[in-house]
Length: 122
Image (tube, rainbow, N blue to C red; front, top):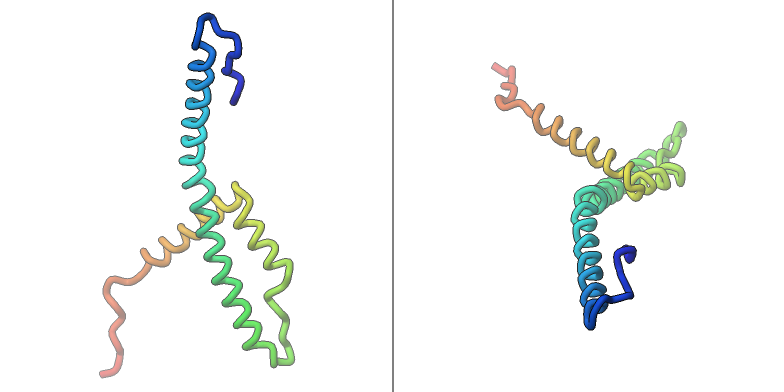
């Protein structure tokens, strides 16, 4: 970022104004990068973490409900939790997971029948 800063000036005041202009340009480029990071990292991160929390909560209650059976095998393991959190935090993976979650939500909403099935009772 500081490549464009010149310490040597050709006249009085040119060095300070050049430094100020370069710093302002760097601050503006950081602002643009953060605008790119908002939809590409932060929104998917928040969406994936919220979905992960609800999925972990559902898996926990499902395990508690099934734990008294003889053939019980736990579905909520440390590996499951670590994988879900890793996918939520890694920048490229959370974007892909967000797209997958969004696509499955759109599919579920768009496949809702507009005319409900009538009861066959006569």
